[in-house]
Image 1 (tube, helix red, strand yellow):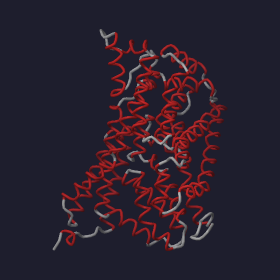
Image 2 (image 1 turned 30 degrees about the vertical axis):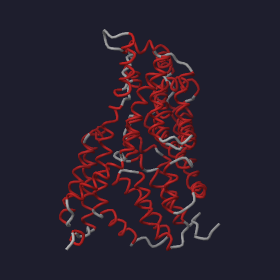
Image 3 (image 1 turned 90 degrees about the horizontal axis):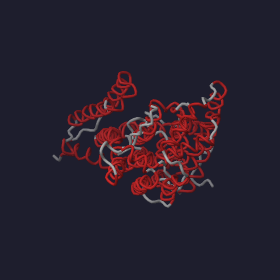
Length: 484
């Protein structure tokens, strides 16, 4: 008898146990470690839950060799994201040293009013992401700058992060340059621009509600808490005295956005942006570099060592103001290593559950209860979110549910755009809300805030799936095969 015949399919209880164990451990980690749960506790929880799944798999007849191969394959999927994470770490380091990010913060403090700051943040990030098709690049560049501006205005960085992510994912979702926007119709069998047009029905109401909420929060702050202009003046004066503020400092940003718009792959585009940032630092921030050099090191050696360090270890700026120092001292590949650890643990857990057939078992149970169109769409949304939770990857949250539900949508006469829109309404935009998901981990690394801090303010990401489900139950804009 072959090994395949000896394998016993997992029961629903088998599939349920590792997930419940993970949820309990993650919740315990948050209770005990708070914001530090992403610095190790979450990783251990994922590995222990994976171990529980492995034991169940061995009980059902799977061999360790095949499980290990699945883990290696799962981690290999993340290598592209890991390269991007390392490049973004270097980008943040060199752009802080070159004055690119400080210049964005400086001009932002000059022109943006606190009363509409959150809404402006969301809108600008949306426009940038739509232009370049990348929520990650948007968050790591203009998003970082908006966090700095919020600090200057003494506004909430958590709300700002929510606005950055809301705008970034709104723009990414509607951009024909976005990978997920191309992936969803490819999986569902719909046409790209037909898919984008159909998404407008759920996306535009969601972003409109989000912008209104950000305006309300902004005006509430300006009414109840007058802006402390002293802190803004202090930050502006500190930036002027620390850096050579110049519009030319924004050229690395313009080059990176151009590369992204030209559809240059993310890793080389971000890496080029980081290298240009290092060159710009040598040209425009020579005095700052010399002050950052170690004692006894000067001249060419100082320039090389400080810029080189910015790539792998970020920068440490000492202005005499601890809050400003914290804002300007970041970046480097080393700052992303914890995030990479989290991503690898999460994808290993997801790979084991997929290999052992546990994810498929969940979907079979869900489909048996999805009788109406509304319940089918709600089930798809739940599956996409669940896949994001379990596999920790937004691409998996589009591909797996798309493959699992495609035949059912066709059988019920639903147009492929219904499925592709639902995959985006849930799989794409809920990924940054999950701390151990590749997107949530990336946002943590780029914005220096955990999902637990900003999740309540990602209004677009929270509202969009709800609107998709409501449309399903009331039958609004639910296309049938053959509809024009």
